[in-house]
Image 1 (cartoon, rainbow, N blue to C red):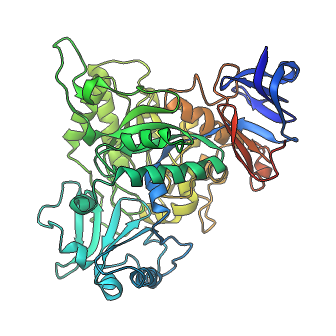
Image 2 (image 1 turned 180 degrees about the vertical axis):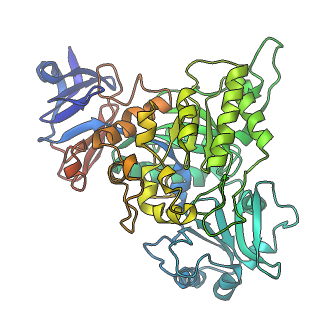
Image 3 (image 1 turned 135 degrees about the horizontal axis):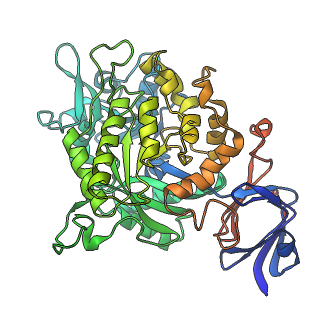
Length: 542
């Protein structure tokens, strides 16, 4: 037998236990041999990796690919460029000087917890860009600030349930739209043209491949808070057909895109997409994943639903993005119709309500291996964590949050609750399979950064947030490979380097299971389906 390619001269971390072998053979896009057998096999091409370490391709279980790609052309308002709110205004003013009146100025990534001066305001934006339309997105995606030229075009008398328009003491809107109130912008900004979405997917793909990412789960397409277009799936197909979808993609479909279906009386497929399309439809490159449902908001934005008030705000326990009974009804309908469900829940009250809804749905319609998920699962106590594990719910926390927005989370929770925040060790000890994810562009999405933060749990100020929740480097690598594959029902084909699985690898400069080397690890190359699709110049062998 002559195979397509054999990669040699490497330390290949294979199998579920990352056992090292020195070669991997690929044919037809899949692994056909490992170690000595791979070395001896005849091949059309042999690539010597010059001692590099090969791991399964990284898999981000919760990211916003199109959003990230499209925002690469927006004003960067993160702490990299803006330390004070006046820096934000200066960036907007500079953009206004280059654009015609009446055009949109879009910025993203600001965090009021890190800005001296707090949130930008409509009044401040009016001073520097009063003749433009300005929208500045918060890093969480759960709120934005607009100027008066935009406010005048919004129907502020009909704010959607699950959101609010923040007003000052005199009752005037400050420009801050939180949660579902951002939907007031839909008549101006939605739907996004498919070409723009596809362009964002292409830009994101290029970046992801440079970081060793070979698979992602897109956390919401279609309608709702994170959807860009009711026909958004077409943009992914467009990117794929143009050869610009570089990573294998599982799409979560926004709950608002699902609807009641006509069906025979004996059928349980009563809720979903037309033709009964649901979780699992598609192929190795592009497939439908869970239904994505929002229950609450943001921790750093202090809008997630909590049992107790946020620290320093005795009247603020956050809120839900829809009535609690609607959360339960939507979960029940989707579960009955065979969907995997991924519910955003950050606050501990939201987590409790979502667990109640899952429990009720499973009691009425028992189903093995449902793999329902709680996205973020940001604040959870021991009792609810045990209940989550008992129901085999998959928690999807983000390790990188601790570093980039951990100080804001600490401030929101106060010292008595901080150890219940974005837990990892406790989930693993309870028997949960935990995936690795970033929620990019909320924070930097490079998996190597996420792995380091899962191990260290240091905030940007150096605070050790939840020392007992640290995990090992090996466990962190497993989260970003097998754990994420399991969370998307794709572990038979991805997540480990084994014979028969897809030949998706990251080629690294150092071993990421060695905690002493985490700061030194670099991605040298990325292989998808056996093809080297990214190579850091001069580093990946010949």
